[in-house]
Image (tube, rainbow, N blue to C red; front, side, top):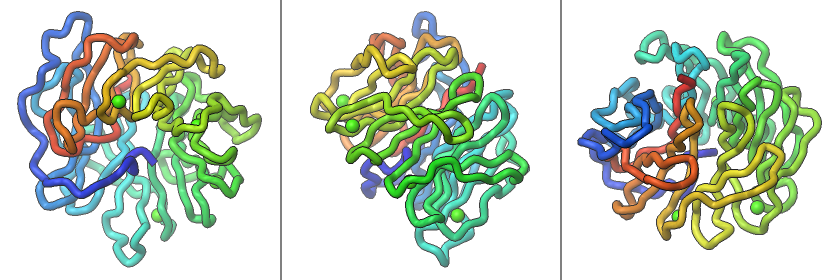
Length: 298
Ligand SMILES: [Ca+2]
Ligand SMILES: [Ca+2]
Ligand SMILES: [Ca+2]
Ligand SMILES: [Ca+2]
């Protein structure tokens, strides 16, 4: 559900320009995959260095390619796309390709929405689907086998993110009335709620060492990035800006977090990297609608 934060129509210009994160102390140049709006109205998958520079475009369609996620060895990328299934307006499916954009393969084939994949260290891909009539979390193997439903609740269940060892999944659900962050075992059992707040709490991202979960919330009036311990304790705000700040993802060395913001560019969403304590925010991309970053595993 990551791309559905107010998907307003925006002017479409290709997403390439100089960035400002180069030379930041302590920031290692590793790959971040994301989706960017492109000329003609679709969105495609791009990879950019965390230190900025010209993004590499991996897909080229008039469709919406979005919500990319790295395999743990960095060799493949899974993503969501509505390419090729236009007779079902809300249809999208999970696709896998090599990290250079070749060898594209479709994994799901329902006529409903299948999206927001998250790849685990054990090789499983969690995703959300509304094929049963409401949004649930499912899991599938990267070869298309083993498709299985994990949540069974009439509310929205989405935004999956795996713990580092692949044993647990954090996710967003409205089962208690509004968007909260929950954790469950990888087989769907033992659901525990981590947030309890009348505001939006969504888009969890598990840290690579398993100790913390970053997420976004508007509990302080507008969307900001927060972090909490993996048991839900010590919920701390990292950003403080009237702009939209959402969709966090951790760097492999735990020292930085990439997120989406429209600060300095009203209506244009770009990727920013900050230190894990919220300091030293620097811009990474310069597109019109850059969304859903996923930082590589190493
Ligand atoms: Ca589908
Ligand atoms: Ca559900
Ligand atoms: Ca909430
Ligand atoms: Ca904000």
